[in-house]
Image 1 (cartoon, rainbow over the protein chains, first blue to last red):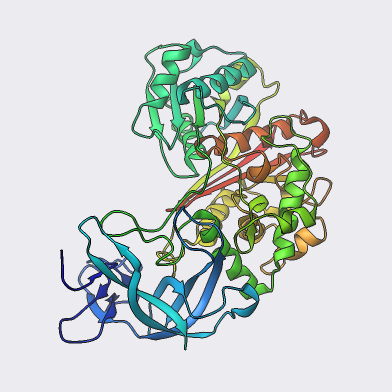
Image 2: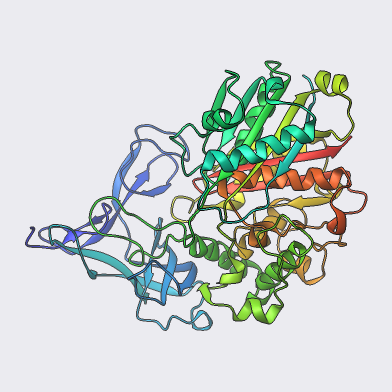
Length: 137
Length: 379
């Protein structure tokens, strides 16, 4: 079992000597930003122009839903959010620290990333995980 | 290249058949389509079978083991919710290519109850409810909310789509449900993923549908009778769009396939008399009015408000009851909606008949993403 938390997804980076961040893969040819490793750009097809970038911590809410029914054992309601990060890249995640009421959530609202324990979820070996969430900025 | 015709087509009444096997359910529709064509399994030169749940289990061959092992080539197709349409299209292509004259296409699915989808999985910890939701009601809610953001579409407008499709299903004896659901009932049903309530989600059912496709030469030889012409067949995968990998873009994929289908058919949206489109959720149907060009961008809400998409309206949509009420057995859906449109073009749809229907369109879209569109024409 690892002593420190593991990242919940591959594109969440936890440096030994710094703050966690989300990593994107950006195409130097067309500027498209992807989550997760890749070597070829699926937008402009360039094969040798992808490099890693640190994604920005702020963005705007593009779309969302309030989820009232999920799989057994998952706490509801919660806000599933699609966020366009400033500087490029679209990320999906939970929007927290806001009332899960569609009337009170505004498209285009400014949000920022926050990094917290993954809702207490552990893997088979008992490892803890760190995840990312959005909250109103 | 030869025109291709649907000579026989049918579907079973959708329902829940936990005591039957997938091939057994598929065999029933296959025999019905053969009977409808006035042909037998001995006449078939190839078979294309669509099924998702047992995609690695040779469902097509197992159907033939129930209805006749003639040794013909069988291809099993899986393409998410476009699976049935893909099997039909493969059959169409084989005739278009001049390889065969008589081909059987079957779509079949046996579904469990409950939510489909879910984010993540694999290594580590479950991601559902941690990184948003990957459940289908939520994914399509987010797509619908994008429309709300851009065009002010309301919860009530989305709900009206469900009222319409459930109403249509009361005239379709093959639908899973035939129950009227007034607006207040739809809106007050259990909220699953805003704005989709339970009655705005398609029904998971078991079902099958099948079609016999023939070349022009064969159709003339057998007599055109009730044959329906396949005027266009289009299949698209998801072209790159900025948010596609995080938020599947059902709009771009549908628009691409629709553009190709209209071009192939040499017709426009204004020529289409009825549409069976992929209303896996009420929010999805709203998007496709615009994606299929049935109205201008931003006017989808008006289409439902003003009744243009009801039976008797300008372009009736999902008069079968749609996936919302007829049910959505994934692999069967793409052929079942071809059955529906053919039934209208043949003038055999009874109470729900779209009067004078000459051209109809079918549309399915499976996340991942695959969009299949067919345009069918009365002969």
